[in-house]
Length: 432
Image (cartoon, rainbow, N blue to C red; front, side, top):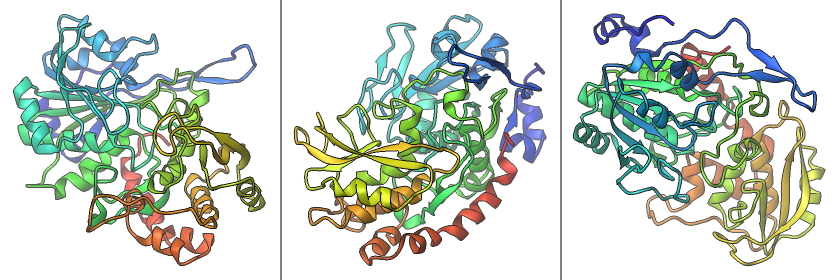
């Protein structure tokens, strides 16, 4: 491994350094193995493992603030913080937990309050919901000069971890700290799809104007944020950014074929299949239908007490690519319709290459709206009263659905937005 560039050389290196220089080049070819079933599995090495293999050399001599959660694990299942803490030459000034907490004990919309981690003795700070200014205060309190981010994302704008990363980048810039991303694969690949967020609908589930299914890793997103968005934030300027690149991974490699264990990034994304569905069915959080929370198949079970077997029949009749719908019944143990029998569907992705999560979810919404019991979930925000608008990034989707517009018209409304975003993200991509 090439020695890590110094802070001075990075700052002198111009755009390439500040946008995020990969600290590790990818291997020439991925190793592969054939498990018992004969299925070919790639040997993918996440950025954390690449750094750990070098004894965390690139992080020595720095005062580290590690922003992570249970997904920040090495291939041997040890957490990166536990591995770092075992290296006495590393100095961890503090650990910062996002939504669900550093150790992952909190449900959706929750976090872990500040505590001393019993395994490492390190102070863990609550970073959930903190903006750049608050995080800057926490980083100063801990004495951080380098922020390390290692969280498995799921590739969707309304998943909150990427916005915690954005705020942390703003905070690091404010205090003059550097920012290091230990990159991980995007489990749903490179596809870009869905509507663009408009600034007036910015929220915790979508802070800046990117499209819904962004098709980037967190390392690539950090480079995009640094090149396109941070210069427009506050006093402007970029953060000193490094990305420790994933080895042996192609965006065409399904998460199930990476050879990596899936650690749920939140309690309601238990499998890669959940992540694949969530990119679209996350919309159902903005309705009065259950999105499957409180079942073993969140975001794959969709239903309500007022639906019936015709729902699956109509959806299958649409012939949507790469997906089938099994008639299903479930009783949520918590969240919407707790303790009630819901009729609906189990979403089954039959061909991930053809499946399009966002248009599929729009079709599911259109068919659900045939039922008298359907309604949009209202939010305690008088200026923006519908949660679906925050999830989709504007009021356009809801208004087009309410007006009875066709699936083709609705999905066509964001075609230009996707094309423009694909063009804008191109300089920041690391895996081709």
